[in-house]
Length: 293
Image (cartoon, rainbow, N blue to C red; front, side):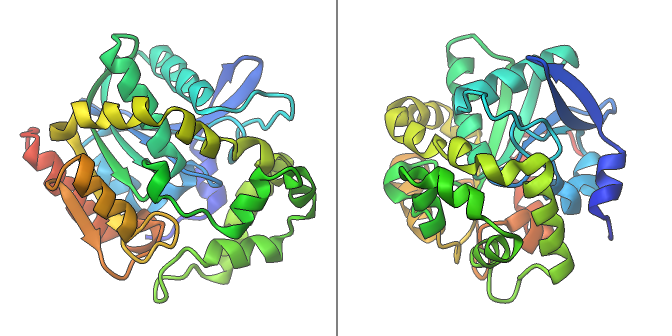
């Protein structure tokens, strides 16, 4: 299947939130809802390879969170995981969605953890299940890239100003598997996403989420532990950020079941190994006894 960035965004809609325009995409049917939450520094376009097959089994909703993709990227916004969770709750309420499954990746895993914690507090829509792709769900087993560490440092704002397409593509390419690299055209599309509305200039603001993971570790890890029977994990093992070490930690403190490992795959399973990722996800949903299609 071939889908360009422009084609993806031709099919999106706008949601006004706190005086900002948020981009989202839906595929509505009579099937259960599945919320797709993207990672850093990309956007909903991450799901293009799996969108059609997922839509055969679910009604879908995906958004570009504030500061990402084609949504607004205000410089004076207090970016945080909590704010992104607020945004998602408001969007789902606007769409009349009271319960859904979650499929998340990277930064989106952390947003999902916060939503699950709110669900425990009866302050969120009903979460039927959550499946997490490569992400830093445990700060102690997360290994950020050098550029991420620098963005978090006092000189992060300077680095944001110096970020170029060439530097982005080199760093972004380093987290993919050796045999599953993006093409030059695909890398250019992702730079277009990141740099849209000068989004690369606020990377040092958004990346503060790494500190939030440390501060909120107990809350966010406990959320997974309480719902371990409804949590799945699909992981690309050669990911230098959140690969095998993160999986080992997951097995220690969350669960040893509902785990699908992709041996030669990096940080983006949904892009690098879409079919294998879907196989794992559909096996996970089958374990939840969802209606067959």
